[in-house]
Length: 128
Image (cartoon, rainbow, N blue to C red; front, side, top):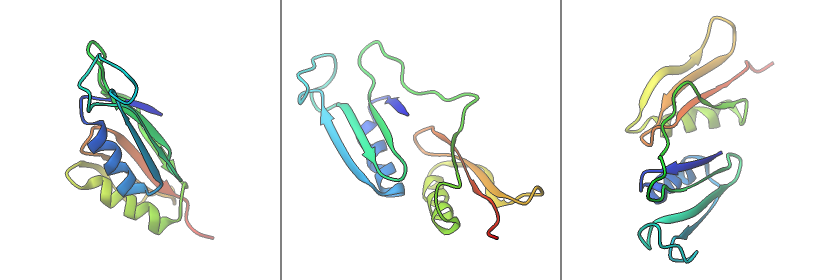
C-alpha cells in the first residue's frame, strides 16, 4: 500500500515503524530534486518488515488519504500477542471502532482507526 499523507508522512511512517517494527527509510523532496513541495517534505518513505507500508507527503494538487469503505487487514499476520500489541499501539490517539476480542463465530478480531486516519482490521483464529 502506498499512502499520500497531508504533510505528515514523516510522523506517520515513524509511528508505523514504532508499531510494527521493521526498517524505515525516508527520502525528502530535496533528496529527489523535487520542487513541488517543501524541501523537507517526504517524497518517498518505505517501511520494510512484517507489515510493509510506503508513503509520501502529497504534493501540491494531490489529494491526501481519506479511507472510506476500506480496511487494512492484518488477519493472522502475526501471533495473537503481537496482534494485540499492534492494536493497542494503533489505538493511541485513534478511535477503537470494535475492540479486539473473541467474536461469536470463534475468531478474535477488532477494528481501529489510527491517529493518521488508516482503518485497520486486526484478528486471528483460535489456537488449536
